[in-house]
Amino acid sequence: MYNIITGLMYFLLYFYQIGVLAFINGGEEGKALYNAFVTGRVCYEVYKRLSVSQADVLRAETIMRISEYVKSHPRASEAQLKAEVEKEIKLFAQKIAELEAIH
Image (cartoon, rainbow, N blue to C red):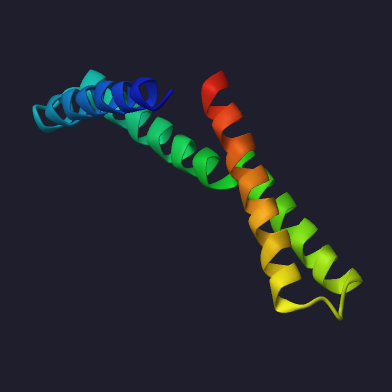
């Protein structure tokens, strides 16, 4: 998945540079092309910042489970807390590995 996105970004960067060159050399077509690529780039950046990845969701779920354990076991020893955190981190890593295998 990363290679596809990286390739797409280089492809878009190439077209952006073509748009800049056309804009510099003048002409309405160059201006329109440059405007389209700048608009597309801005929209992509907004989308990227507003979207949440599955890894972010898994991370938040892991943190929530750990905090629920701590709240429901206020007298747990440090060893018990450490064991629970380790268990949750292993589970998180396993889910991330499964996620990466899918993509």
